[in-house]
Length: 156
Image (cartoon, rainbow, N blue to C red; front, side, top):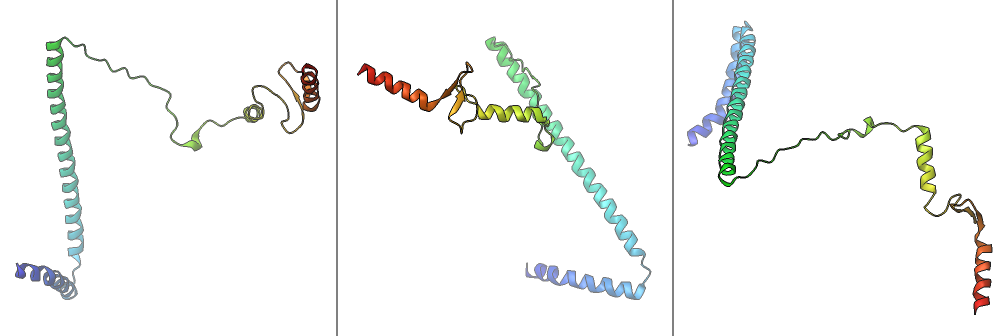
């Protein structure tokens, strides 16, 4: 075990020295092209192996799903269960990028701002005491309060 570890530690350094000395002494430079070609070929083989493994995996899962569906169908037949049909409705999908949403026109923006300013009972400027009620009658809160106070005092 110790010999293996020592060889791993020293071996890579020795190979680097041998490669540097061999390149300087021999000096033809053809090894670099051969190394690149070998690396490219190895990479192509690796990619092909990955693709084949993925295809085998997908085929295996497809077969397993077919077997499961067959068993499901047998159970449905045995117990007289109807298969649920999956209704795939294509709902309008929201755009994933908020920057790509439909832009609002200035009129739409103005209408939204106006709706935010208004509530269900009153219209107009909320900062002023005068408001317009839904029947377009102008009221002043001070005069309304005075009238209510007079009615209350008259009844008591």
